[in-house]
Length: 316
Image (cartoon, rainbow, N blue to C red; front, side, top):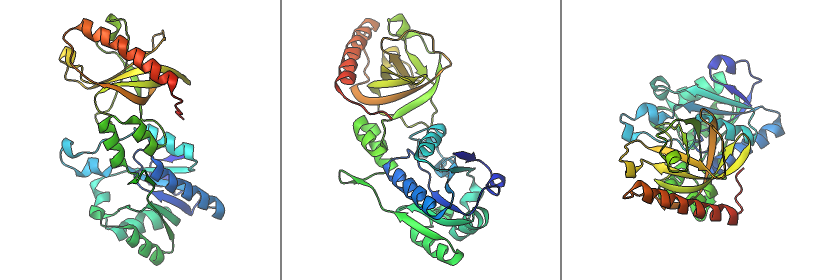
C-alpha cells in the first residue's frame, strides 16, 4: 500500500480511482465491509483502489474544548496497518483544516473527487457526511455523482447482536471494560501500541517490572483496571497483564498504561510494544499499603494465567 500525504502525489497516480471515503476510526467490521466492497469492484473493473481520509479528525479541529474532542480508537499508524492488511492500494491521508471544513458539499466533490482524484466510483457508509457542517449526505453524493459522472455505492450497516457496528458503540464497550464485546465489533482485540518509556519503577521494586507504554492524550482507553493481555514483542506473543489507570495507591494524577510480561526477562526500554487487551480482571482500586498491592498483583497474575490458558484467543 502506498501512503500519500499531499495533493501533488495524487496527480502522479494511475487514475481514475475506486475510492472509499470516511474517517475509519477503529477500522471496525462496518468499515471492513466497505473496504472489501471497494477492493472487489476495483479489481473487477481494473481501477486502483484507494482510501481518502483526513487527519486530524475533523472533530479535533472544529471542537473548541478538549472535553468535546473525540478520542481515537487507534493511532494513525495502527489505522494504516489495518487498512493495508485489507488490501487497499493507495491510502490518501490529507491534512484537515478549517478551510477544508468550509467547503460546501458540491465544492468538496468537485475539487477533491472529480478534479483531483478522477473518481470512477465512490464507496461510503450509510451515515457518511461531508462538506460544510456535514450537510452532505450519501443521497446528495449520489446526485452529485450523476451530475459529475461517477458512481456511488452506499454500504448498509453491519448489525451484530441487534446493534449497528459503530465507533461510538465500541467506545461504549471500552468504557464498560468489555473487551470481548469490543473485539466482536472490531474484528480484533483492542490494542494499545507505543514506545516503552521509563516509569516510576514501583513495579520493579515489588518484583513485577512493568513496561510503561507512551500514550497520546487523544488515545481512547478502556475503563481503568487490570486486564489479561498478550504483548507482541519482536513478532512473538508474550502472556501479560496490563494496568490502565492513575495509580491511586500512590496518589498519582497521571494516566498510565503499564504492562507486566509474564515469565519474561530483558531490558526493553525504548522498544515498541503492542498489547492486546483480552479480558478485564478487576477495576482499579486504592490499597492501604504497597504490600497489599503487591499481594493483589500476585493474585492478578494467577487470574490472568488462568484466563490466557483456558481461552483460545485469536489475536490476528
